[in-house]
Image (cartoon, rainbow, N blue to C red; front, side):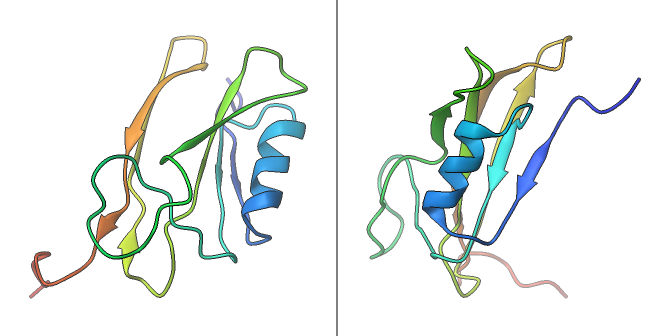
Length: 111
């Protein structure tokens, strides 16, 4: 029993998000904001310029061997962050995938 997944949710900016991933023990993923950083892997869906892959993978300095995904999804509700994480039976992160979803007129409106 107990907690074995830790999501660090913050609003201090992309650089601080990376610091948290690098320096805080036990963190599995960092979801950040404030700097409106656009991260994306692959062909870009709009005119924004990606500042890196989605997610950015940061090597922990305190939990050697741990890789910590860091995500932001731009600003103003233009994108919805989408991140899929897979953990093994020990609770260790083993794979990740995803990209922000562009919320334009191709996304059906709710009724």
